[in-house]
Image (cartoon, rainbow, N blue to C red; front, side, top):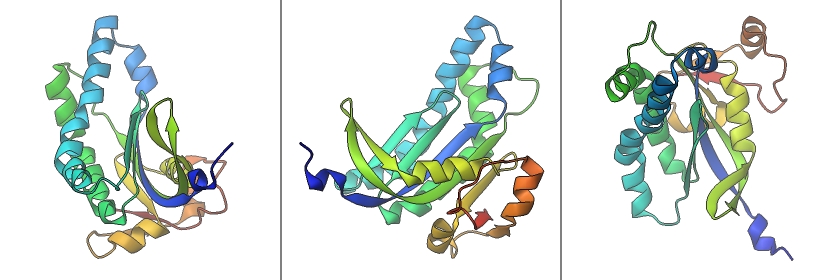
Length: 199
């Protein structure tokens, strides 16, 4: 039987990071280079999380943070509103430094720079234990993933809730969702994603 307390939803703020055109470019690498790239790719995020998010998370054990490596990006979810600005700072640093970092860590030479899509969104999620690992299930990842499909290369998009939290600390531009959907040929955007901003 399920306990009702297991289904108590909470506010969750999720950053989705996606490496653009990664599949084709990675398939063109040799087996050894692919192994080096994936290992390096997984390591790129570590110093930013350790420096920006982890110290704050460790101060408050009730503050949940879930980090998942997706193969061509990451999902980082936090449930403390005070960590939203830190999540945004992490996104901006990663966007600006990713190429330098992946080159340095991997030692590989790439013909062209890598580009990222990044999106941060709010959602009402449920905290679960998934095979012994903490996770969030609900709207935040879905909304962030959908919003990321509207991103230009090396752009961070946020929803209205995130904008309300960080608008005093970052330069933010309102994005015309209908126009951007047409430009990007995005077919599916749910009705709860009507307002999007670019940082």
